[in-house]
Length: 474
Image 1: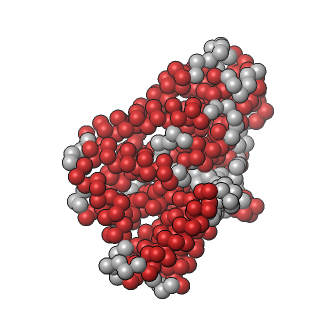
Image 2: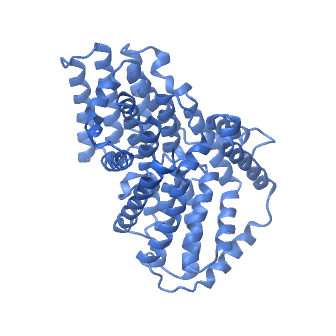
Image 3: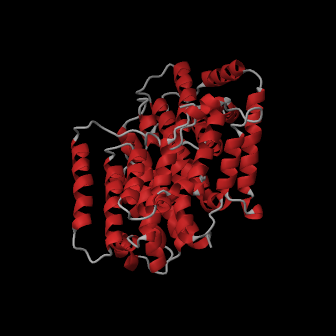
């Protein structure tokens, strides 16, 4: 995990056993639905109908996770090509898209921050500065998680980094898995890791969402614009998460002076700042500076991400070597390229218009003003995410038809896309994200704990969006 796994978390693996009911249903549907669409006497051009058939295979396989996500994506692109639905360059167009390589650059940046020890050192420094009481530790975890989102564009990697700190604190406090302090610490570090990478353009889900929105609208979605759009949500969510966790999980003891001693000892073990850490920090600051000023120089966030990521791998300049490049998780990168390719093929064959009518036509009468244009997409995406589970499949299968729906109905395309992509951050069940699964695996909180925290924060986020979308975003 120290290799900077992007927030695609486990997408290279198929979930569950081969004989589980979900798997069996997935196999049957992934074969039956595409075949039925292929031969059905629909009033569609043959090319569009065949594109829908292959896309249905990809969508069903992603939802049911019968195959690794990357393999499903490559199979779909291959089918688009060999069945002569589109040409080779169109079937694999997503692999030449800057979004795919932005994600590759982000994974290298995350690996650099974790390998050098920079991420962990900053976590200790922030927690030590904030304080060692339970209340201050919770606040420190939230602030550290937000900070790490800028440095480590992977929710799962952030969970691993922060969990190492939390486990050390739990050992010092002499508390076990059933304690409220343990519940509070681990539910905080888990949920915030999966939430903040929707506020900051970090991780596979946000990068993919940005790429699909930009592809459909032709509007350059800058890193700084994304951050400015959701920064008010971050401020409210930081405070709300802090107070909510303190309310739901009151500590067995408030005074935790041992925590300060532990943080001091861990910092002493790390020693003074190494040259590698300083190089990593410099490269990270350059990336953040360029991203935050992209409205001035108009350099694409993808160009910056790829550039800094590759610079981190240059011998003598960066901190990564050949072995680090071998440990990069390429599955989310392949998946992203395949998802973008699917959207391109559906648009090229005009099959996307059919999907739009089926999936989103019912929304049009409900979107009558700025408030309903915020709430309806947000909660629709939230419910859609419950059924699909995986964040990436939620974004990949819904953004292209959503954008087509918005354009064909004269709706504000960019705000609708941003709301929909952001709604993927709202989670109430463990299976909805690899980040949640990772945090849950430590055994310090229950599914009911996640449900309560997730539902409350999802409602808070929707209320904040209800205010900022019509009044702040314009």
